[in-house]
Structures are given as C-alpha cells and as structure tokens.
Image (cartoon, rainbow, N blue to C red; front, side, top):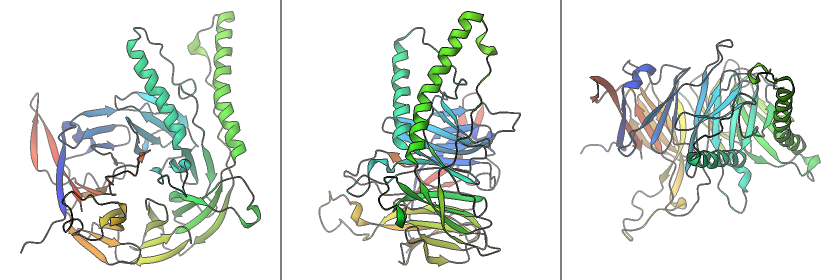
Length: 465
C-alpha cells in the first residue's frame, strides 16, 4: 500500500518577474539570505534588497505588484525585513530597512507611512496577538521590530487607527477631482507618528533574533504598580538565550503621543507663516532631524552562555508560552517562556527551521458522528514542525512532550511558510487551525507562456496536514 503524502497541492506562483529575484537557479529560494518571504491567505510577498514582488498563488488571485521603495544610496540602505499587516478589509505590506526605518505600502504600491524606529538594521518584524478572552485584553495585538541590540513594540490598535484613517481619506479622494497631495517626507508620514516603546536588550551582547512573549507579573517590590510589564526572549552569539522584563513606561508613551500630534501641526503652521512673509520656496526648507527615542527600562532576568554555541533562529508559539530555538550546533531547544526553562531538546538538526502548527488529536474525529461536524479549537493539539533540509524531511512533534506524529519528505530547495496573524480575528466557528505551507523553489512544474513571447517559472505551493 502506498504511503500517504500528507501534502495537498494548492496552487503555484508563476510570473516572469520571479527571474529578477533569482528564480530558475538551484537553491534560489533558500540559499540567498537577502531573499525574504511573507505569506498571506492567498498572496505571497518576496523581496530582495531593493524590490518587493507581491503575487497570488491561488486561482482566485493571480495579480502581481512590484514595489520599489525609495532607499538612501548614501547609507547603502536596503530591505532587511518584510511582513503582512491584515486588518479586516485592509491588507498592507510592512517593510523594515537596514537604516532602521519602518515603511508601510498599500497593495497598489503607494507609500502610506514612513517612520524611523531606531538607527540600525531591522532584523525581523513579528506580527502576533493573543485572542481576547477573560484573561487577555485587547492590547495584546502587536507588531515587534527586532534589531541587533534593541526591540520595539507597536500596539496593533494604533496601527489600525492610522490605516483606517488612510483608507477613509483614500476613498474620499476618489470623488475629488483635484485631491490634495501631501509630502510624505516632511515628517515621514501624513497621519502622525505611530507611538511605540523601545528597549535596549544588548546587556548580554547583540541579538540575532528576539520576541516579546507576552505580559508578565511586575517585580515583587512593585506589585502595586499600574505599569504593564512584558517578557522578552533574545538569542545571539554571546548568550544563546537571555530574557528581560520590559517596563511599559506609560508616562513616556503619553508624552510621545502628544508630541507626535502637536509637533507636526506646529511645524506646518510655522512653515506656512514663513513662506507668506519671506516668499521662500517650500523645497528649500530643511527637514527636521529626528532624535532617537530614549529606551524604556529593560531588566535582565536570566541568560544561558554556552560557548561556542550560538542562537540562530527563534520561533514563538501562538500563545507565546513556548519558543523553539535553533543553535549553531544543530540542536533545537524548546523553551517555556513563563518559567524560562528548557523543557525539551532535539539533536542532529543542522540548518533546521521550525514553525508551530495545529493538528487534530483524533484523525477520525467527526467521522462517527454527524457528517456536518466542524472541529473546534479543543479538537486540535499544538505541534512543532521541524524542517531538516540536510535530511530532506519535515518532522511534526506533539507539544510539549508528545511523540513524533509525522515524517514528511520534502524536496531540496523547499521553504516552510505560515500566513501572518490577522488582527481582530474572531474565535467564532468554524475554527481555522494554524497551518503549515511548503513552497518548493527548485521544482519547475511547467513553463507558463505570457503575452509578448515571455515565459514565467511556475513553482508548486502545498499545505501540510
């Protein structure tokens, strides 16, 4: 009897623009560290150092968009991180640059927002949130900007409000024959600066990756404090794992919000007044220098130093209570982020990558009952998918101490992907489990003809179950 593949082909990405990103060469998808990928429900964003390509992989969405951000040639600025932001009817692309800027683009390629977070390269953009329930509140949805020695947190509600304002103004300008164009370079955006918190997490050396795992209790001597505290986990060369307690510092955040609203309006008034008196050209005005935001308090909790081992990749579970960490010695550590204890260890997985996913506990669930039964959240168990490219397999392990449930063969040049978190997603039925997608970059299944005698490469897209 033939073995089950546990993979379902969903579609393919096929366009001539892929050749600009290196498609067609062996290992183009996995061997190039400058090639970034971000997955949405039916779209894939691929980026190199200067260009972002957004393409659909399903039959219902075959559109393609190319975005070329304006990057500073003097600073040799390049794209260093890319991710999706999804708010109900609004879908945008967020980009981090090597100079510390955060850029938000519409799916038409228009720049919506530009803001300096902190001088330095953006290593990763983490979009996550915990569902609203009796324990978690609405402020748990966030975007984290990870840098070599710092981590920033932007609240999802602030980003949502800004995008809704942009969405309303964009649609209102549809009826305006002469829309008023605003210069995004004046203050980096047209809708005010996004408030955020910034912490220095370089006490144990620069980090290769980091994540805010969730809200944590205050220190023992500050139990009556009204501030909110977060736990951050970092990995790097000097310390394989380190943890910090991050103070929210509301007073500084409030001042930042006030200044972000008052300063742009004041500057605009002064500029208009000076132009009226001296009749100076607006383009000759010097742009204000943005001072780096001061760090909020970050208190070290613990660290693990084990030379020559180095932390390489960090993956967070949906709830934030577990984190998988790969190191330079081919080991995978499963960290309990609340107790800050390693609860499981795998060996012999060099160059591995990990993603959390959900699987049905009972494969036959619903088959013995009604044919219309829809699994609920409690029917699924949390699992860790480990992609071992040197072995050519993906292993799926049940959390926390469960057995290996699947061993799936995957072709060389494949990459594991997962759709980004959707802000404001409800927990109503039917429940959508955390799925795992596999893009095979080295398997050219066909040549797809295009108009004008051009040809595009087509690569299969599959879901793992």
